[in-house]
Image (cartoon, rainbow over the protein chains, first blue to last red):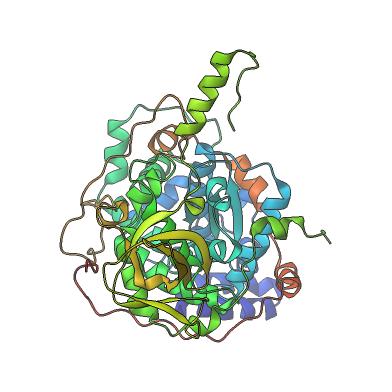
Length: 313
Length: 192
């Protein structure tokens, strides 16, 4: 939280520097954040990502470098590298399911998600949202601002419920939950173990994702995050959705759906196996919310089809 | 989603019907057996101001209907009366799925679990050859990184001004909301 403000301030300070001074400025920024110098991240790339610009992949840190960084006991992962790790994990998810072809739907989810992200603790990340073409009921995030929902989820929720889900995933990103999980896995030597136990597949030439990162990413999305991280994302997500102008009961509404899903329903299997039981999540939300947000809940229900049917600007 | 081959035979029709019957309907559209978790009012309209139709004792069996308005969920009593109860006052009928199972605990997790009780390990259900399943273990195990798709996704990004424009058109206004308090460690999730 405080660090991200420091980054933003430092970035703003850098913007005011003459071009010649910027390289040393970045070195200073890195040392403030405890990040490692080296790699080929340029100041422009760092600033670009801070300011939400697209990041040229040419400046990506080598994949092995990122694994080394994750395995270290100390040292902060700076935002540029966080985004790069996120890109690689997003590539793993998109390798398991493609983006949905409906451009209007993708645009709508990006508008909705970006609006919610503006109310979050890290509004300057390059937030990127996508709908996966998958009939299952699930949502994922990756470090640095990548958020995914499945088509099967979008089909079953209204706008406030989708906002609740996006706010939950946005919280995982702002709180760096995936990075923490990756670091503990990397330090436990899991990547090496996983590589030993699986059939090596040859990566396409020039792939930016190392075998180790691929193994860690697959494991991460299969096993899910720590339960306490999920409870935190529920609690903060409800407040974030409410702050963005939505019915605060969107996320509890989705949890009620999850609660009534049969545990062997193949559309809900991965959601249910990677999250704490829905009733427990609802109990904790009830303790946190009480009735204090009920006054914000008197909003008309907006169906997603209604939004998509509205004339495009 | 399902591509039935265009054999205009009764057999194909029957197969399609059986297949359709085996697909789970959207959870939203389903009525779900439920219980009153505590003594609560069955209200005529969603809201604390709604006239009370009846007082429901704790554990009164109910049927949850599809409608939700904010925290208010429409239910039907065994006697056939319908009305609204607060979402938090509604629990699953005993033996429902949502009361057990959950996160696959991993010894490798660095952060201490919120619960001291180890959560049950549950295997992902094996896929059936017919029917539809969601993204699962097999998809992840076989995933090869698709960086080109990430680039396509990044091209869909929405800039801040466009997001604010969207919010204006949707009449979304920011609200001042305090962070929610962290619940005291209650140890167990509330099974009444």
